[in-house]
Image 1 (cartoon, rainbow, N blue to C red):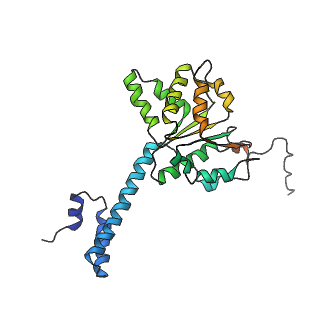
Image 2: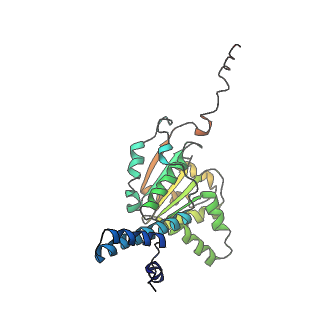
Image 3: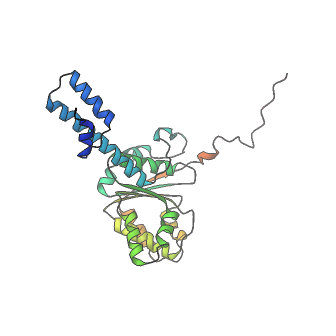
Length: 254
């Protein structure tokens, strides 16, 4: 009875599909490849399969959501935006250096889309990523009922190579939330990269966390090594809507 090579390879831990192994063996047989060549091709197949599974797992953990491709970002829409600086960020040197990124602009100007695309690039380069709105992350931390549980949950936001916190400034937070955010930012300081999107200048962050004593220290740590992209633009969401002040189009006479 002939040996089922694909089954044997699966039994020792190879993740390549049976179909892929059979196709490879058929091709190698036809080309009279050497055993070394067969092993080399099989190793490449296995590495690609593992890389794809690893990327899928890290993408699921990142919770980036549905991100529009970067080529759909209309760079001509904002009145001002430093495209060259953003494209330098796409090299991910800031991740290697443990530096931060601030994407700042009014709602609907593409901050989240630009942040998500940096996250996708980081995933493709093998980095771990986590995306969350700031409000959801702080709610997640503050619902923990004990200090050990809080410590375990904080690691979820401290450990990733890239942490993306979306929409700082949209919902007010209390002192406990400010302390939790400071805890995360301080632990990541100069070690891992944090990307924040907001519509507020640094001096306005205290408005989100009224009476929180730690906001000055939080801003100092986050801003120390931070690339800032300011987007001056009207909201994208309304750009395709008709101007109510414009005259109505004339109907053609029949």
